Length: 164
Image (cartoon, rainbow, N blue to C red; front, side, top):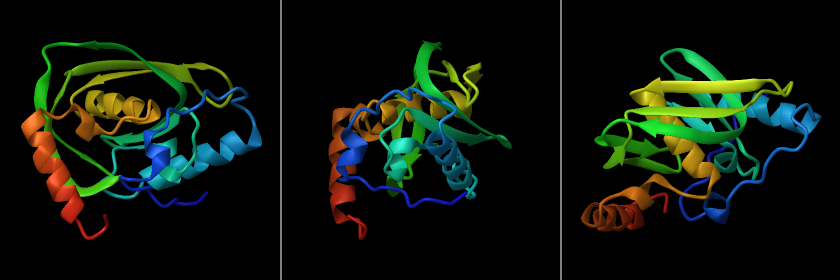
């Protein structure tokens, strides 16, 4: 297991849709899951998508309320409730939080390394993380969903960031 470096805004891998995992039990996929778990357990992290560590496969790890896990080939199958503005940040856009609309409930369905079905559902931070990470796997960053004026402010701030 290795904590992997997070790819930052501007890296093309973050803008590319991830490919499905064909053989979940493959040794490379197992190593990817180990790395995703190791990377998400750093304090302050709620989720890490595979493309954030440079791998274009549909997988993410999560670390919410002391529960750490992963899902392969996740599909966001349901969101519900009235969308709410929540402050959201991203490891690939470090140091910034912007208000973004997210549904208060989300459900993701995928598989584990043995091909068994995994269903993750929840409210609050877990719902936000499920939406955020599945967006990553589709090649979308959270700043794309910001209100236009907020997005302009975000882009201006990002361009002035020392890591940009």
